[in-house]
Image 1 (cartoon, rainbow, N blue to C red):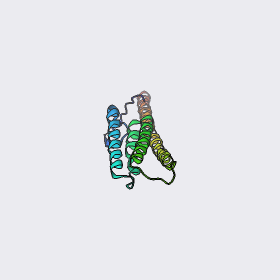
Image 2: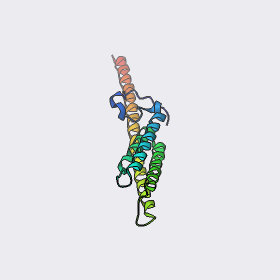
Image 3: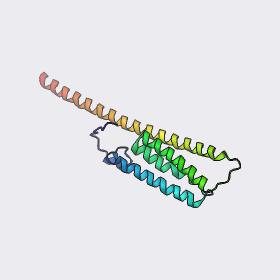
Image 4: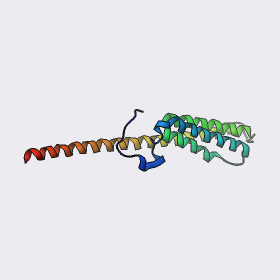
Length: 154
């Protein structure tokens, strides 16, 4: 994505604005990966009886919101793989051997859906800001034109 300068201050959004970490995008992705590593370890150490599934959405959301679509999809796939590895390593008993693959597939779909949804919302927010800037620029030009027109009519 090309860098866009927005005259609207993003300070008011603090850490929730998608571009707040634009210069530190790699750091945001590393933080997301570190959270995934900690979650995977906790998931493994606590065993299959404690469900950590919901917490895997945190790194997916961080990657999709601050990184974008590709980063979000990559993190969603990584979360699916880590969940599978953790579940496999804890010797979770299933009544049928293929159930673990079904569970992994369903979690992967959930992670991907979350990633694609958040990255789409991110793109919509950024597009809305771009349109607002264009509108404000057009308004300034119109005001300038009206002032010049007023000078000529006096």
